[in-house]
Length: 147
Image 1 (cartoon, rainbow, N blue to C red):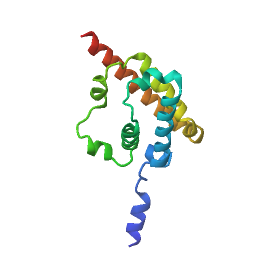
Image 2: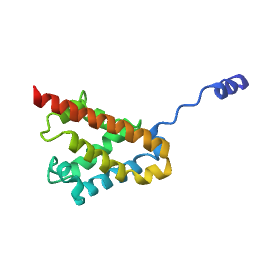
Image 3: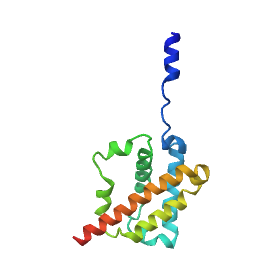
Image 4: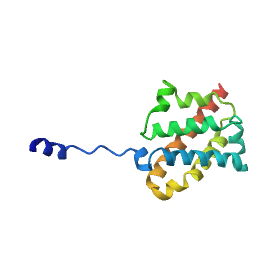
């Protein structure tokens, strides 16, 4: 028994996921709700808002599910959307361009302010990755329009 206890203490610790580090689903849901609230109320995000349907409730849930899974939490979004590629899904939406990508990034940065204050390194990394994806989606959409 003593040998097995020693083996357990020598085992590497499981890495903490961004999902765990951020505090789980509640902060993600809060950030997503804040994101969509800003999109609905701020004139600076009007073009971005125009890309969405009138009822944002389904998008709130989908984005929270996606970010939860993307950050290492429960993979419900991937289970509900097997084989779905975010890039392909967004490439089909008319109106995605550099301007709307920059609006998305600015809106998400504002929505993530509380997370930034709690864990600036994680927030910076998360927002940088999101911005890269967003800009890549805009480039892909623009290339699809050009061809």
